[in-house]
Image (cartoon, rainbow, N blue to C red):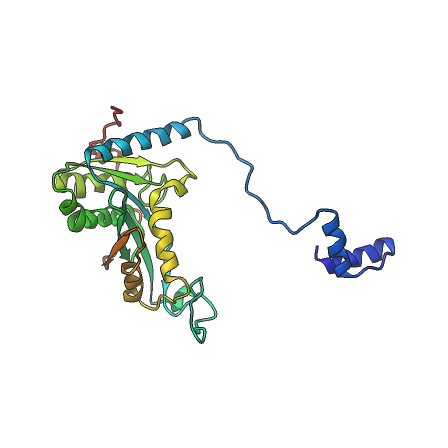
Length: 277
């Protein structure tokens, strides 16, 4: 209840007439203060959760020692393209006026930024799609990174480590993600691909979240993303004092949702369980 409502209840139920400021002072003297909910109660975790973190760390050390590429991937929050409010503030003489409601029907499009963060080189690539965020789009984005960057930065490497969340277009379950990984990257570029998925609810440990996506959000904070080109420019201009930089590409292709891989077709996907050495 608000201070005014507490004062009203005191008067109505107990006949005590007191002002709201007095209620505030008395609550303070009794060690009461305004507090929000605190997320601290755990619903438990899978017994293999810590083991999975250990496996991920093992492969990161193994690939890092060999000089092979390690990339962290994920899809950033979708963005409405148009004169819509973007959270944050900027230095200016007058606030920019934007639409009073974020109606999708008034947007020029919806951007799906898929990020690839190179853990070893502290650099990144974002492929901005205007279609659905599907496993095919995710794999094509990774392929774009390898074609334009990875193959030149790691010319002698024959293997690639991918760190990803358990859900979404690059999740652990979608067969289409595995199928397209094999066909469009492993087979196409003669690469051995190892994929490590972070446990459910542990996406904040995925390096791309705090090393790349957070920097992009800070860079365009308070600026309406009025066009795809403006969004791409903000991504390309994202840099840090530590030398982090990003390249951005625009993928105009339309991706079909709901592509299924049959049980028979899934047997053709060559997947071996990871071997810890």
